[in-house]
Length: 287
Image (cartoon, rainbow, N blue to C red; front, side):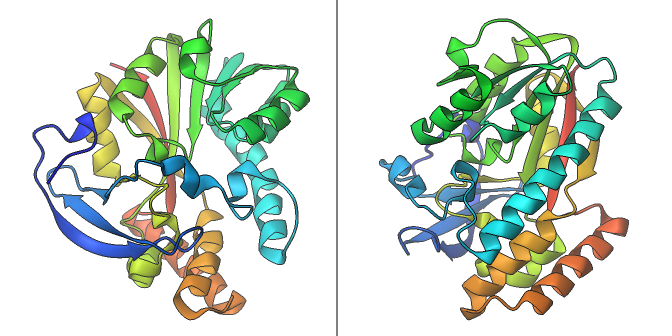
């Protein structure tokens, strides 16, 4: 089987599950398991991957409240800004500058800028980038190669799973960290209770936009490969509820708010002992 990205060089993979793109195309994609890394990948990777992002329902690139789910998504996203900021300060108390890779429409960077933090961002999607640049006075670039300077923290909030070549990106980001700077990576966790509960209907698989599906072990191995170390990890508590709400809709065709709420609650409860939350934020430093 052709391996589409260099991260897989020398790895053995086996078929794991078939998953449908519920957002844009309705196409089916296969997930393959790398048993050594405890990581899944999506195959095939479409040549025209950008087409699969062209939906008014793709939440990170839009912030209108067209439905109750939109409203809940944007409400949780705003509440998460405070939580994310507290986490950044916990792991980097002397935080003065942040580069947000995959900044979408820029609300989190706008929030940080009001805390007198110097901010920059990278966002490939033009529509989202234009919104962010209007808000942040043209501080958002198209690619990491256009970014100058170094930063106390570089954040990727649900971004790494979208990147075709994680190895290349991580090396570039390392070179833009200040001394004692941290890399912050938030990704869904396919080892969580809600992932197991919903199976192929788990919304956080989000194929083919999500090319990679990480576990805590996979993140550790990826960091080790780049001479970096996970210094801590924290949950994104709200993700289990939102993902369960979408998963209920994918599975049954109905929103099932109460079932989604209790599944999200159960997922967080299980994770209190297993550590396998629906989404995890990893705080990473150079060795």
